[in-house]
Length: 174
Image (cartoon, rainbow, N blue to C red; front, side, top):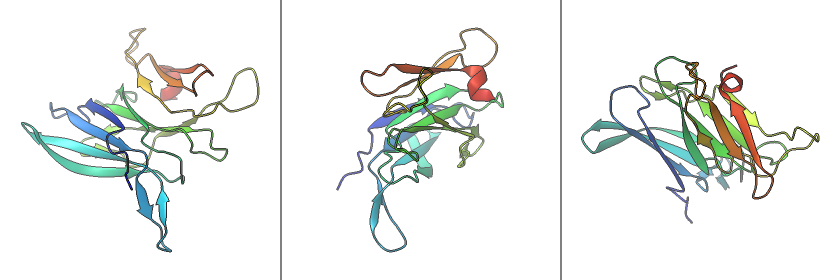
């Protein structure tokens, strides 16, 4: 069995120490549940750089939805909450109550990422009251386009042909 370790990789300075840290997605990571059965939940490994080319694993962020493929995408969002630490998004394209996909937003802090997401985003089509397939399959952070101090937007493609959901900085920071 394989976890698809490295399916998604992002690099940023999470803890504001001046060194690049690495996040590695493993969307098919399996965890043993209390009854002993393996469940595919996905995981993101967070490696903090401690020296020149020296990295220590500081934490694991593990998905909760079986077959949700948590960690399929990982993106650096910049400092959404303006606390001086970079924040990240993690996609789980088959998570959620209808398997529609979710995107988790984690805030940076001095010792890594907050282990509890500050927001969990789900896709919804504007024209119909339905959900897109595979929301969060790919996530891309963007720059501060309007120079208001917040990252300008985040793009989340939903499936192959369904289009792109664009979330503005004010939406992500609300």
